[in-house]
Structure formats: C-alpha cells, structure tokens
View 1 (tube, one colour):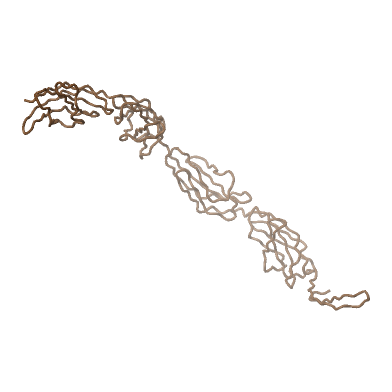
View 2: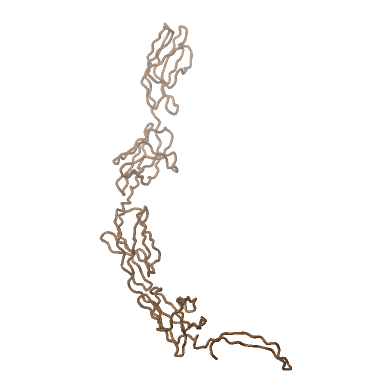
Length: 417
C-alpha cells in the first residue's frame, strides 16, 4: 500500500445476504519507514554541553526529526526543536545544560504530513562542566551592630557558594561547611571583643563539586566591643542625716570614665541617679538627700568614654542616722514703745535641715505658746506683746525634718517699761 489518502466504504449484510446502505470514510496511510525512529541515539556531555548523534535506518525517508529532553527517564520530555532539524548529518548540540546534571534524550521522526513518529530509545548522559567557573562579582560586606552581612551577585553554572574569613595574620576558614545557593550570609559578632579586622572572600561551586576562583577580598574593620565592667558596693556607712557609699571599681572591662550612683526605695526598683557623675578615681559617694529612719537601696554603674552605661551593681541597703538637734542660743530682745508697742528679737543664724521655732510664756501661766515657726532671717518682731506689768518670757528651739523637738534655748525675760 502506498502512502497517501485512501477512501474506505463499509456496509452491513443481513442473514439473507442482503446488503444495507454503505458509509464511506477517508484516512491517511503513513508508511512505517517514514515514522520509524532512529535505530540508535548516542549522547555525550563535554565542556558544559551535550552532543547528540543518531543513526537512521537505510530505508528511512524521514525529512525532519525532533529532539526531546527530560530530567527523569520517564519524563516529562520537552521539545528542544519545535521546527525540527534535518535527519542528516544526524547531529544536535544542546548548550542549555548545567555541569554535573543528568539528562535524558530521545529522537522522533516526522512524516511529510507533520505526523510525529514514535520516540527512539532514551539516551542518558551526565554533563561534564567546562571546569571554568566565573569569579564571583559584586561581593560586598556591611558592618552592623551584631553581624557582618555579606552579599554578592549570582553566577551562572554555579550550584552554590563557599564563604571564607580570616583575621589579620590568620588562615582562611570556611563560614559555611556545606555549599548553599543563597547570595547572602550573616557572620555574627561576639557581644564583646577587642577591635579586629576581618577579610572575606566567596567562591562558586559547580554541581560536580569544582570550586572556582575566589572573589576579590573584602576587609571589614570591627571596632572594639569591650564594655565597662560592673562595680561592687562594699558597704553603706550610716551617718547623721546622710549615708556614705563605699564601692570598688570593676575588676575587668575597659577603663571607666566615671561613675553614677543610683538610689531606689526598694531592691526591685532600678531607681534614679543621685547627683552628678563621679570622677573615674572616686570610690566614695555621700548622699545627703535622705531622711533618717528610711531605708534606701544603692547601686553603682560605670560609664565609658562615650557616656554609655555598663551593668548595674548589686543593690546594697543603707539607712541614715537621726540628726543631733542642736540647742539654739538665747535670743536677744528689746522692747520699743513707739510708734506702737513691740518686741524686736535678734535670732541666731539658721541651720540646714532644722526649723527654728519661737515660743512665749507669760509669768504665772504654765504653758508655752508658739508664736512663730520656720523663722528665717536675723530678727523677728513680736507686734502683740502681753499687756500689763507681768513679766513674759521667750525661748527658741529646733525641729528636725521628722518634727522631733530639740532642747529649748535659755529663757529671755522681758517686761513692759
């Protein structure tokens, strides 16, 4: 039977041999020698490419073949030659491959009418790389507070990357034990450490395991990350109306540029800074802004050269002693009649942390009466001295911050003229 379009007619016959109405159809006959696949297919991977060769049968009259490729033996296959290629010289070169990867190829014949023939046997090949991986470009390093971030541009024919680091005078050491395909890597920094310079480089790795030439080195200068140490509060000395905090300098860390005293009402609270910063040689701080009878908790923190704070020391309690309340000197007074009766009293100098009180008593009366509180200045005028001829008396006394009365001064005796 020759190739081409053929007509067919079909009819039925009953039990008596009578023919029924016939039906016609047309079909195209494709000779086997047209669509039979190549007898053999051979594939070789070399220099980052695959060279495919095949052998057609002697009677083959195929005018066009298509080449298909897959990553797995069972497919799926993709058509590499949608427009077909001539069956001779039976050669096809595939450059869209990667070194170290296995590929599967097959070839089909195509009839003159465009019918696709059955596929050939599958040929498997593992591509051998060209052995010349490109040097990595765009390698950069960004220094952060806690890490050095390394980035670079992706390279062709590269399955992954190896990143290396070395310090000044040291040897190269890998940062990643296994290759990875990302183009970013973070190298963490220690929380504390001396100033150091690091050199970095990155190399590409093929699927076959071939390591390419390393990139140009990138140098990162990491500044010192040493911090000031932690002071130690040794004791809190209780004094009258104040406390004295004795502390010891940190045993390690960068030298402190100064110290701050922190005071709180409880060990759980961090507290507030008291006063100004102490010089670096200081080991004692006196806190006068306290009240006797109350407990305070003290911590010391060291400062670095930029004003940054180190860790707080352990809290240490302290309680100031009650102040000794002094006895005022006897007041001096003068009675003046014009322009109105009055007594002008001369007062002793004021004393810090104490309140001066003036009291008066009339002769024959048992109790003293406070006529002035919180006296300030050198004198006080009693504009309403007692009437009559009876004697009257003045005295002074101090109150502390808690309202405790001290011993009264000697008495000043006065009488209207």
